[in-house]
Image (tube, rainbow, N blue to C red; front, top):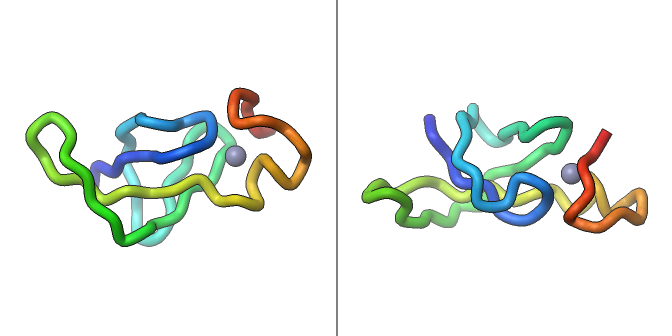
Amino acid sequence: MRVLLRDGPGDGQVVDGHGETAVWGACLYERTGDREERHGRTLPVFRHRPDCCELYGRGAEDRCE
Ligand SMILES: [Zn+2]
């Protein structure tokens, strides 16, 4: 299943997601229930988990480790 990522290092990327979560690099994204049009297809939106990067005081520009 293709999903659209929101926020964090993977913002705007379309990746494969499975179930309730998707992974971008070392970042974790979770299902929101929203849907968005992208390239003529309606994709479920997955949002960057708030406790993924920000917990360590890093901005959205940085990658998680
Ligand atoms: Zn992250």
